[in-house]
Length: 347
Image 1 (cartoon, rainbow, N blue to C red):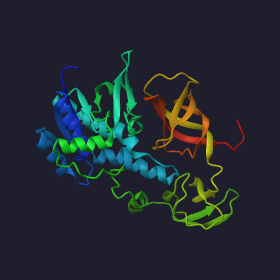
Image 2 (cartoon, one colour):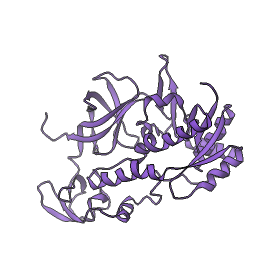
Image 3 (cartoon, rainbow, N blue to C red):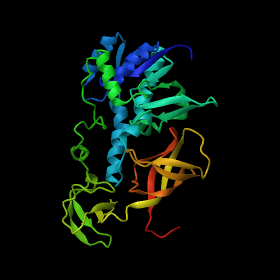
Image 4 (cartoon, helix red, strand yellow):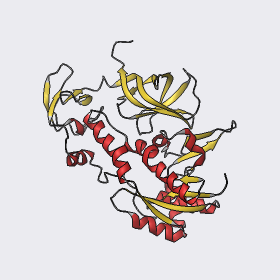
């Protein structure tokens, strides 16, 4: 690389603020860049930049966010899928905006406050790896193109959240006690169903049914539910009920006792390779944004692939992301399109 300058996505939160100071300590010239989504927050980011003497700029990403993330988020829910907006935003909106700013100022690198790591192996290849401790945000970064990885820095990837919070105090960062932000930046109150309702064209109320089609009650609209959900169903029964299927074609939500939610095969589309993986190699796969991983074997198929789960997993959900790991290394990802339940007839 020709220089040690970096454009940092400066959100105004604790993580990116600590990342700024760590980059400075590592000898980088840091340019802070705040991304405007129309909900405010610039002041905190600017205060952090002023504290560390960092050049500060803003970029308006509202149009790109609507086209690449918010619109697809809405369409996924209307189609009975459960979307993962952060994983879509990183490769299509956030990182492209940071790279554009890097080009403007002549910086070789971009950085964010994600809990993930970039490592170079003995083969000289750059790898995306999970955060060093319990915070693994590499899952949300698994759609980034492999070619971008050599130009990305994750300064806090080797720290735990509590350590980062203490570093913020030690560095005298003005937002050191600021609460962590919600996962979906454009829905700060976390009520995605209300957000969808405000945008209009949401599905009407419909029937809760069992697997035989028997009506069990009424629901508020399929966009209020996701596969495996138990809370908020408001249906009385002699046992716990779970969402087993969502059917947009007739606006029904299928409920079951949950015994049919376990799957042993998962299909996906749009495989994004980040490191070599041999067909049939045993890996682990994370099927949703949680700490649970499942041993599996991956077989590419066309532009997607098939995962044979070596231990059944609960409720793989269309619209979510399957991320493959070998140890700490992220091998790649694909969008889940379907699953075979363990009580279904074998292929």
